[in-house]
Length: 96
Image (cartoon, rainbow, N blue to C red):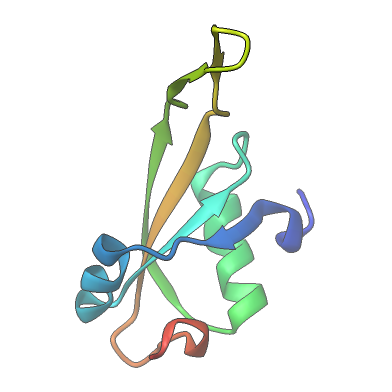
């Protein structure tokens, strides 16, 4: 098992992720090889909350054109986890 701080990379700050907070769903960028049980255990240990469900998304990186050299590059692929918490819990990190 990995260290919980290596599994969770960063919270996702976007309009869509803040809309999901109304349903007690929090979004994190996670390590690409992390499994759902590892993500659940990491969130529970780092934030001290009870997780009900974990959904994951593997997102492809966008192709970008470097205007200087006229070559195509690629942003890295990422993995996101949408974590649903028990209704009695919340994470203060996301509170506005």
